[in-house]
Each structure stands twice: as C-alpha cells, then as structure tokens.
Image (cartoon, rainbow, N blue to C red; front, side):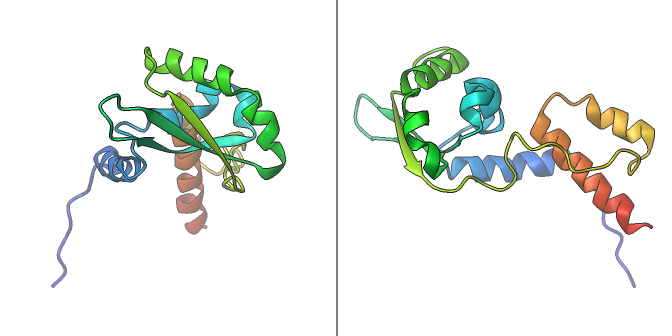
Length: 155
C-alpha cells in the first residue's frame, strides 16, 4: 500500500535550508549574500563575492567580512576597500562590518551576473510572467531553471 505524502510549501523549506546555510557563514538573514550585486554595484560584484562573516569574540565585537576575489582582480578589488565598507554601512544602516579580508579563489560558476539560461517558451506563458515579477534575481533564476527542468522532463 502506497502512502500519499502531503505537499510541502516550498517557501518554508527554502527558508529552513537557507537559514542553516547562512548561519554556517556567520550570517543571520543572508540578505547580504543574496543582494551582493545591489550592495556593492555591478563593477565590483563582477570580480568578487562575500564568503563569510566572522566575529573576533572580544567585547568590541569586531566583525570581518571575508570576500572571495578572482585571482587576477585582487589588487583592483582591494583598492575599493573604503567604498565597499561605505556600501556595507549604508546597507545595514550602521557600521556592522569593521574589516574586510580579501582572499584569492575562483568565483563560483553561477555568478550573480549570469543571465538566465532558460529559453523563452519552455515554461507556460502565465508561469513565466509570474516568475519574472519576482524582484530577487537569484530566486528568479532558480525558479526558471527549476521550471525548465520540470517542463523539459515532460517532453
């Protein structure tokens, strides 16, 4: 006898998974990681990505943001340290991050600047329009990619 499982609300599942993943990186909400391109701008975000936030454990609670930088761009990105800190202070509304640490490492393949790989017409028009109304680009790309996989499997 087969057991029917109840549908799971995707937003609740994603929230649980993201909270766990971001807490491992020292972040409570993950907004900075999801909105990196908006926070620092296209020019800087094209060469780097936030990796984790650490706290020094002292009474002063100095907070450090560790930033992964494409190896060829380390000097270029580090020259914007003051500007990046100013953007972070404006994003949080107070100087939450006191220090930046840059390290050289390849950026993830799916960068924030990548366009969606889903061709138009794969999803039904009404679903594609609904996804395009989502303001968060990373979530929008993920949902379009998921839809293309699901609808592609039906062919």
